Figure 1: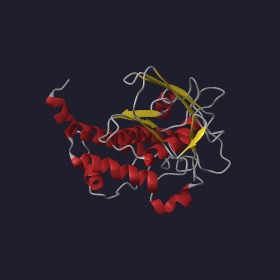
Figure 2: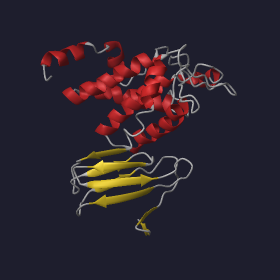
Figure 3: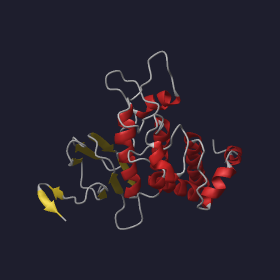
Figure 4: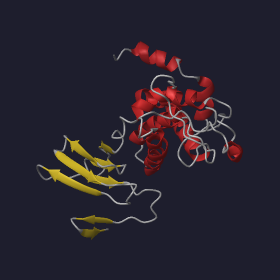
Length: 266
């Protein structure tokens, strides 16, 4: 709407008890409900995009680094019984049936996408891929289409799915949304300062076709990842184009090689 009153209202909705310590690099998250906080942080980053006020981005960036670096399981999920717990207590929570609420992974991916758009670092995409493949792809029953609420770390525990008519959790709503979003962070494009006027980022290795209308380019990605650790990118252009092609070197790959038209490239 471009009406200033809406921006003023948005800033009034900021939860200062969460914003202030995070913007100052302080982790006060113990005992807090995880999925109540993550949307607040998404709001902080959105306000940074609109206002440029550094405390909003500082809070979002510190929160992301804290949660992904010290408060998440290997699969990318976080929390137990929907809440953050002290980071020195991970071992005692592994036997819980209620770790890793799917909604938390959903919203952490939303935040990750926003942060990557402002700072295209591979670390964001590494986390995005790990959480997408484990927490999101692993949240749906391929036989029925039903979704998980928690993804338990308890060894040998069953995976519980919702039912068509007798259960509807918050993770059912976002769970339905999750599986329509696999294409939304495979590719990014931007115009950084430097000799190349445009840049294309290939973040995820998912079979897909990109129609880059601005450049008149079609990029087709063919891969069976994660079954195979390789991908093929086929570029079709109506005319000669110049752009930087950035392909993520995954954190899980100690080495990587590239060939162009069948010949090894540096």
